[in-house]
Amino acid sequence: MHPADPSPHHAPADDAAPREAQPPPEPTDSSGSPTRREFVAQMSACTAGLLASPLLAQQTPEAPAFTGPGTLMKMAFKVNGHLCDLEIDTRTTLLDALREHLHLTGSKKGCDQGQCGACTVLVGGRRIVSCLTLAVMQQGHDVTTIEGLGTPDKLHPMQAAFVKHDGFQCGYCTPGQICSAVAMLREIKAGIPSHVTEDLTAFPQMSPTEMRERMSGNLCRCGAYSNIAEAITEVEKEGVL
Ligand code: FES
Ligand code: FES
Image (cartoon, rainbow, N blue to C red; front, side, top):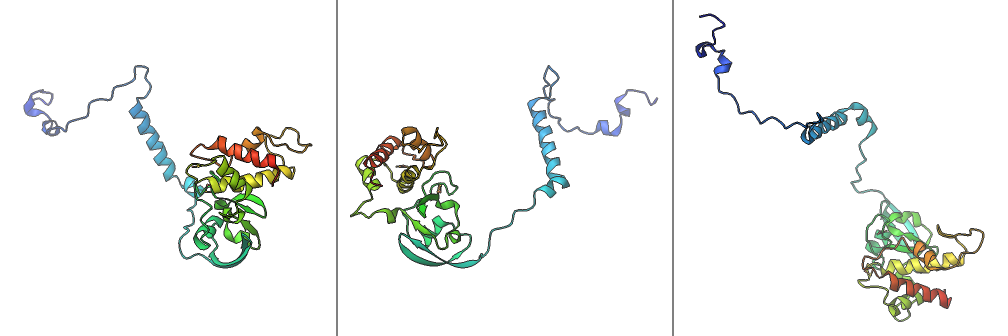
């Protein structure tokens, strides 16, 4: 038989083999642009190529693993007027030192990333978020937490004003709000300007705008802001700080 004979008896062997079912062809965009599936496939291929690139591997060195026992260090600082000696892992934040080592649980851990202000304490009278500072950095410093501002029998004026004006609901943000408000009023008294102070040559004056700006680092998920503002305004007007 002639090799060109189209007879099925002479079809090539692989033609005779059963064929695997093929997926239906991808619908193509009438504009000639790649379909969404093609685009995703292309991008995945690009990303895989980048990840395999030795250049990129050089630019992203492996992060050091923060595991293991760490280094212990002795430190001493004052907390609420009391001298405290600690031997502490150098990686411990001030917030964890206060809560876990000194059992002062008034300062709260909200975000642990410096975003919410729940952990605000005073160091040397200035407010800081204690989750973003290491305890060992406070060697020799004077730390005041909400427990050191007032007592249940003798509330600090700011604590009393928060109670009077219902400046809290769940209370989780409240220790941070109160510490922050106390330091904020002192900052204005000391003439420290904020981002919204218009005249930097004049002494800053308390105003709702100044208060909102200066307290903007303290979030309240319960939304007690208007009552918090009333409490702070009253304390500022009474001039008791
Ligand atoms: S817990 Fe420190 S700022 Fe949120
Ligand atoms: S009172 Fe609940 S978060 Fe402020």
